Length: 174
Image 1 (spheres, one colour):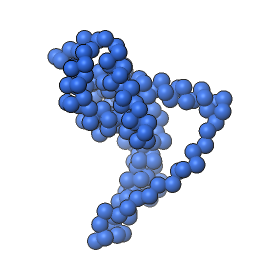
Image 2: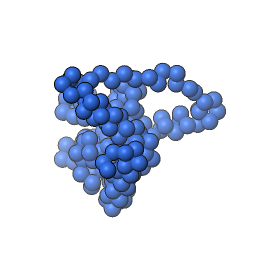
Image 3: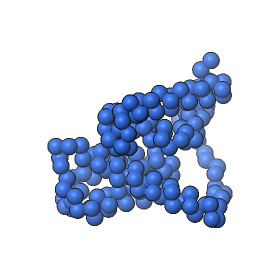
Image 4: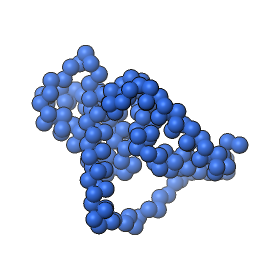
């Protein structure tokens, strides 16, 4: 891949790749590293970019594979010497003071939903993220994760069901 092609790709769909990296990593610093590694890998690969195909899917695949590799590496490392994150507190500010109770309940629902999605197995979380946040069709997701479209559909269904079930257990949506 040539540098000018990479520049064009960054301009066209760099923000979508960055958002995908953020959803995978759930951390800004790690997402920025993954984002840079994704485009570096594309540049180093020497592949010919086919603009007739979906080049954005190629970058999603690079990002996903790099992230998955990093997850495996971290799992091996934590089996040897576990790490503890001491800074787990986060602050959320209210968007408006008009209806504090409604805003607080919405924030709690969003936080619970994000927590549930973060706790889902990787094989369910990745298709959900690609489908709902990046509006990718089932066929493209199937190509990226190298599974049949039927498997992607069943994982989307399972993910929605798990989210709904866990939210109902917490008292939402009754």
